Structures are given as structure tokens and as C-alpha cells.
Amino acid sequence: MDKTIEKLLSKGVSEHKKGNLKEAEEIYKSIIEINNLNTSANFNLGILKVSLEDYKAASLHFKIAIKNVPNNEMFWDQYNGSLLNDYMNGFQRNVSNKNKDYNLEKDNFPKANQDSQSTQSFFERPSPIEYKEHYRPGMGTENVGGFLRSMVHMLRPKRILEIGAGYTTPFLLEALVNNERVFDDGNLFESFSIESNYDPKFIIIDNMSQGELIKRPGMKSIIDSKYTEFIESSFEGHAEELNKSYGNFDFVWFDCGGKREYESFMSEYWDICSNYIFFHYTYSNGKPNDLHEIILRNIKGNPIIFDILEPHKKKQGSITMIRKESL
Image (cartoon, rainbow, N blue to C red):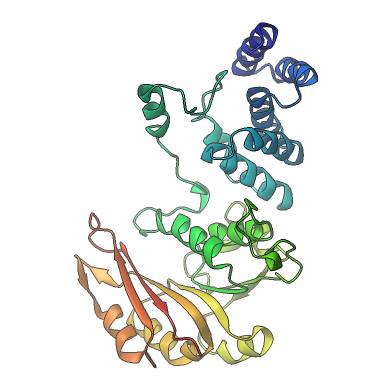
């Protein structure tokens, strides 16, 4: 690294840590004037822009960092977060808390030539709970949110149905927002190069039994999203009208109630689910419970069934995933 840039970067990081954002911004910009592709200056300026809620500018600087170090997950996380925040007009993704775990350093990312000790410390940094304003202890969904987000990224569904809103809701919406863009590393079908045909919808049904959902921080932005239709009601009795409006649902997340609700879902909604269905809390103390039995007893056809258990949890620590047979 050029010694002039190295000195400027050290000074910029120092001012940034002190909270002198204006001074730090000017220093980072001066580095970019010398070398507009400088990774550290662009990444740190992106972090600074996030703190100022200038998400559009932040995403541009993160994008440059990604071009230089394409496999850095931290860069991708910040880039996607800034894009989502920009789209949702300031929806609080807890980015500021997240950034506290990213130490502002001159080389704040792992490199191939770093020694194993520094690389190890990078991966040992604890990750904070995402969307913690929606998190409810004991509900067993702290790992489910990220899992469902990844599944939406991989499966690219067009019609998502969530029955029982809560901690998982922002993860599902975030995934749909991200799915409007695809990472092109040369492994894409040509039809996915232009996402003109991807018009997903996210249907949320919740009877508000866990409190006034709309008053939770950020939930109004989710409900008002162009992707979302929110139905404030019990889910029973809505399958036919939903099917008329949206057709079948190719991704369903069901996390609502007990035995009666699971019976009702299997009876009313099974036929309008076209691909993947995810059920929560189907095991207790490591063994299938009554909810699991209800699902198996009411299945039609020959779907693929897969149970995922979290062995360290007594109750709400399982998912049953069903892929319906192709027609």
C-alpha cells in the first residue's frame, strides 16, 4: 500500500472511531481521489454512510469492496443490508449494532496471505441477533429466520405464505428483495440475467394473538412493502380466496397454534401448496410430537419429508420440511 494512503487511512480510522464522521469522511474521500478502487477506504466509507442512513451511497462503496474481494461475506452482508435499507426507506435492520462487531481497521477483512491466527479471530467474532426488535426468547426461531432466508434465496419462490408473523417475517421479506438481483459469476442461465419475470408476493396471515403486531419497530414498513399483503385474521377460511387471487403457494412457512390449527391447515391449505412447506415445532424432547403425527396423517400423495432437529433444545427446536411431488 502506498505510504501516503496508509497514513491517510490510519488517520481516517482514528477520526471515525472518535465519532468525528465529517473529518473521517473527508479523509476517506481523499484516499478515493488518489485511488478510487481502494478497498479499505471504500468499505470504511460505506460503514460511515450507513451510520448516516445514506444507504444508497453506502451500497456503492460496498460494491467496490466486493469487486476487489468477492468472497468476503462481511462485504456482501453490508452490501445487501444497505440495499434493503435503501429500498425500505430506513427500516431499522439493526445495522448500527451489527457494525460495532466490525472493528474499523486498515485491513478489516481476511486475506489469503494472513496468518492462521488473525483469520481465526475473524471467524470467532460473535454475531449479534438480527432483527432483535422482533425476537421473542423461547420461541425457538433465532436460527430459523436465517435458514428460511437462505431457502428463499436458493429456491426463488414466487408466492410465499407465512402463517403466524413474527421473528421470521423480516427475513422472508429481505430474501424476496434480494432475489430481484442475482449474483452473476458466470453460472447463470441466460433467462436469469434479466429478472423481468420475477414478481414475487409475500402473504402474511396473523390474528394478532401475540400483541399488536403493527406497533413492533419496522413492522409497518414490512406490511406496506410492495411485496406484501397482510391479512389480520385467523388463517382458517382464507385458502379459497387466496388461491383465486394468487394461485398456489410454492413456499409456505407455518408456525401457528397447536393441534387444532395444524389439523385445520392440513385440511384447508394442503391442496394450494405447490412445492415446499415448512412446519415449526414438530418434535419435543428429541421425539416426534402430536403435531408431527397430524402432518403425517393428513398428507396426500408421496411427498418428500425431511425433519431438522436442533439437538440442544427441549421443545421448539425442530422443522419438518415437505416437498410435494411434482405434477
